[in-house]
Length: 306
Image (cartoon, rainbow, N blue to C red):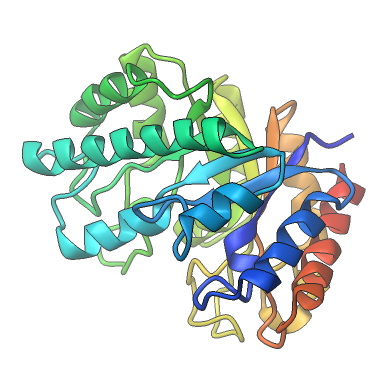
């Protein structure tokens, strides 16, 4: 039996970049009604919703949420390469911590003003290429001291920086993140995303080994299934963090995440608290029903493997 699954709502929704409240209002509860789905991952982009916070608070289903600020973090990193929780530049580090204070305030708003609750908040170890363990330790201690309304904080591992290779994220290594969490001595866990590990490692079998390493640390709270491709695909260029589907659900995607690696990842992760499914809608998905069908196909593979 698989762990409860959090489905990432924003890459699946055709309404993400343009605002269609009727479509998103149809899709969100339908995702939550799928077998095995416990709740949703939602983005924090400087606020609770990219288009309409009041709509979100009134319409988000009564389910557990994972809140991720990664779209916002990448925008900040693009504007200021010093920005991030692991920054050796104190101004860049404190700016990232200040933004997490804003996230904590919005988590409290979800708890107070909506039917949903926040189960998980993901943290990310920016900046690109220049992060270090010691400033991350300080940041984790400061963040853990905030009031998170009962949500579990986790560091979501992204592709680590490799000299001579253009990164997607280029943050700290898994070993450095584990070291920082342990040194901080605070109740912060670890979360892995299959596709982001594949972008880093360029080898599907190596992802399985990295998941096993994370599980062996005793810190692994969750694992998200999201694909990546070594070649140009309908979802974008090679090694893009484009949330590709599981290969069997869309062979033309070139996704390295096949059914066998889903099963291997689940075995390596062991008894995690949460699973995630983060799959983009297919390029021809237009309606909420289209997006729901895509998510359903991917969900069926994960549940069958468990």
